[in-house]
Image 1 (cartoon, rainbow, N blue to C red):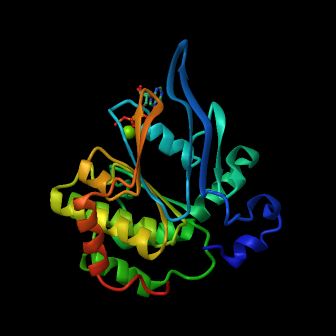
Image 2: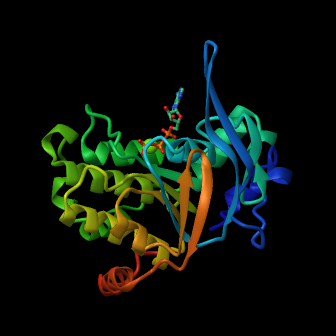
Length: 271
Ligand SMILES: Nc1ncnc2c1ncn2[C@@H]1O[C@H](COP(=O)(O)OP(=O)(O)OP(=O)(O)O)[C@@H](O)[C@H]1O
Ligand SMILES: [Mg+2]
C-alpha cells in the first residue's frame, strides 16, 4: 500500500517510512483524561494492543466505556493524555500537527455512525471532496468508484444530496467515501448503528470485502453482535480498559458473511 509519493516526501521521510514488519497500529499505555473545569473523566485508562496489517478487529463494550475515545486517539483526531499511538511505525506524538494530518489523510479513513456527509453537496460531491482532501495526486479513479457504487448499490443515487437519501444509502455513500482513497486503515465507529438489518449487512459485507480483497486493516466499534462476529479479533472494553480479547471470534454467522463477501464478485478494480 506504500505509494512512491509517500517515500518521496523528504520532510518526513525519516519518520514515516512504513515498516512492513511492525504492527500497522500499536497502542501503548494509551490514556485519555477529559478535563472540564475541575471535573476529570478518565475515558481511556492505559490501553495497550497491536493490530497486524490486514486484521479485522471489532471493539465492543457498554456505552461510556471509552470506545469512541479510543477511536479518536487511534485516528489522531485527539491527543493522548499519556501513552502513544504508532501507525506504520510512526509515533503520532513525534509529529507536528501538519504531519499528523498528512499521515491521517494518507493512511486512515473514517466511517461514523451519523454518516457526517456534507448536506449541501451531492453524494458524488461528498466523495470527490474527500478524495481531493486526501491530497492524492492521481485523479479520482472513476472506474473504481463505479465498482464501489455497484457493490454498495448506490450508483444511481450519487447525484442526490444526503437529505434525498435514506439512512442506509447515506451510510453506504460514507463507506464509498472512506474507501475511494484506498486507505491502509479503515476506522469505523458504529457504522451499522443507525441501520436496519439489510443495510447493516450491506455495510458489513463491504467492510469485510475491503478487508479481504484490499487487505485493508479494519477497526470497527459496534454494539451489534453479528457485526462483531465477522472480526478476526474482538476487544472488549469496560471502564476505559480492555477487559478481554477474543481471538478468532468468527462463528457460523461470521463464516456466512465471509462466504457472502467472497461470492460478491471479483475484487475492486485496479487492486
Ligand atoms: N469531550 C468530552 N468531555 C468530557 N467527557 C467526555 C467527552 N467525550 C466523552 N466523554 C466521557 O468519556 C467516557 C467515554 O466516552 P466514549 O464516548 O468514549 O464512550 P463510548 O464507549 O463510545 O460510548 P457509546 O457506546 O455510548 O458511544 C464517558 O464517560 C463520556 O461521558
Ligand atoms: Mg461511542
